[in-house]
Length: 213
Image (cartoon, rainbow, N blue to C red; front, side, top):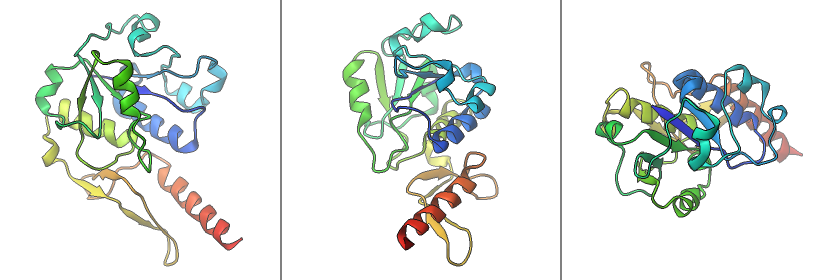
């Protein structure tokens, strides 16, 4: 399976670096492309951590990424799945045979959510076919993890164990509720990118400091 993240932001936040790093570890650098970066982007703008993991990126749009990466098949109309929270149909295991690429990013993980899928559907009306991953917002790494479970592991969406809006407690006075849905691991814990819990704790402490100032 090939995964494309439409990176619609300027730069890379710490949150995004951790998410993208985990996605690279989960799917393999050869199966992921970051597309539609600003035209002015150079390699110096890409975080070293992502480059060290083999991130492949391009300023080209969806229709042109195969020109930059010769190992990729051209994207064909109707064979590219856009993960869209507003789609009418949930992704199914049999969709693995219907699609060559799955498109994410700048789409899932925003809170409150922004309807960026509408931009993509308008830009590529024949290329993209929409599918949904349930009715809750997910981080981008969770969306790709869920898609892998469905199309690669052949697990039905309703059989995946999730937790919605988990609370992470750091001590008796500090806790943060995350406004997303996460996949649970075998021990029943939400799966987060490596280093994300520390970042959430730092952000929580900073928010508390801001309130006290």
